[in-house]
Length: 360
Ligand SMILES: *Cc1c(COP(=O)(O)O)cnc(C)c1O
Image 1: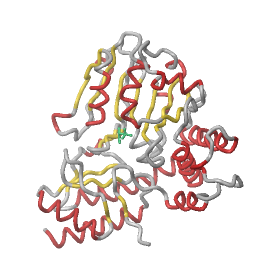
Image 2 (image 1 turned 180 degrees about the horizontal axis):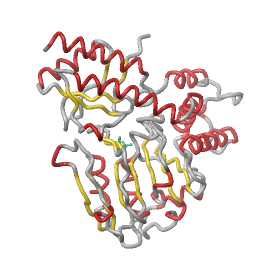
Image 3 (image 1 turned 60 degrees about the vertical axis):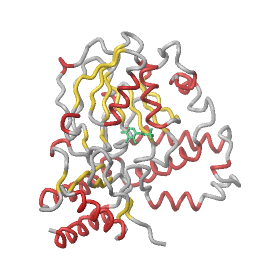
Image 4 (image 1 turned 180 degrees about the vertical axis):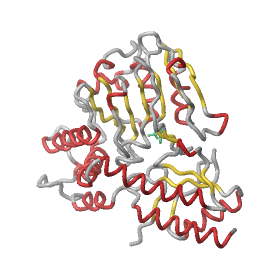
């Protein structure tokens, strides 16, 4: 068996100890005589799994008691509709900051249900920076302000949150959840699809401040109402049981490592290694302004499409897979989520140096 270094933007690598543990427990979970895949979600064993997963998430992210954690389906993309259905309910206005394709999709969806407004956008420079936001740019009457915290495609991160005053801040944290500590109390709502940093695809984590529950628009489908899921412990219907179980194993892995401060150190070390090389390289360069660089997604180019393609092919042959950039940016993108070991980045940088020597 030869496992590759998978730089995919998502679904992405999972920690090897998690995969091994899941393999060990495949035929029989604990003493249940069955796989978690086969288990009733109404069983005592499964209730213990989902409860522990929530407890570990709360502990790791330091989620205050006045927030509810939900395990939903439909991906982050379904949240683009659920957020306005549930939150755009007082003045029917919401402010969106457009920092990439996901933020734009969220905005477009919200605009179908109410008065969504673009506060600022970095599309003028291919989303290579985070716009500067001051409080006076925010509509104090907006029901919420939406940001995409880490822009998976373009490789930018909000290192500092915008000041939105009393207007609740909503953030898509699909590609940075659990990568470093965040202050949950600064947000009204957080959401994340699992397949970048938490688990295989299939579960979406929502963390919502309790006062924002229970005000959904009249037309909100039952399944898209946060209250439905909050009232039923994320078991109004069958939850994505196995994915939640894997998420639980990933959270245990993070806890054993020492939590999100330790994870942040590791992520910073990995990202610094790659960015430092990109800054020194005469062949490759990063595409994002330095102060807004993501810790998770690192896009880079040579400036020559043919050379980019040659690099992607050579990297693949050497065991560095899924490193091709998103079609809207071109070039390369190395996604270095939590599960990517330092060694993977070290080896990639060594490979890039060699490629540079041979192709400059
Ligand atoms: C991947 C991603 C999405 C889309 O997630 P789905 O689960 O496929 O709907 C949305 N937002 C961000 C920031 C992402 O990285």
